[in-house]
Length: 255
Image (tube, rainbow, N blue to C red):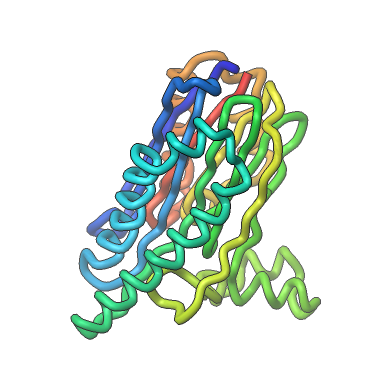
């Protein structure tokens, strides 16, 4: 399996700090190429949101280096989800306790993707960062854990109304600010000639699904430099259209 990757993050046009944190690791192992990508969107005053997102990124980086190799050696794919579930709940408790000690509110979303060559992929998700799959179409894999998405499911809002609703950033759960978190998990086998896209919510408000697909369709991304250039192009387009949030994206092409 061949893998191309790119990432880009931008503070945006209004905020003083970038509270998005990204992780992208690629390793050649005994079971083939392994990729870990994570996007976390932090929330909290001053730099506390940045601290929350960076804390989770650090935890998953250490997990990749220390805890994943034995699982790869045993090819114990099913155990990985259990480990992620435990790790996310530990991070929720750790960040929450830190906030209580300082009497501040902070937290972070989490969207992570692990690809183990052609054998297995796992997505873990908390909040409203997203993971998409792009092949012959653009497909949203994760489910926004937000107030407006719950209202859409209850038929109280249309998807079009939800996109403009002033409550669209109200989260039902996030790491550090929720008493209990229940991550969404998706697993399967990766298919070749596919692009996975992870992004913070700041990336997707001002551009259309068609614009995303036209930029990142697999046949248009032949090199990592092309991927990087297209990522920057769409981030800048968001800024031109007055997106006020931090803007982040990770791309992984599997061939």
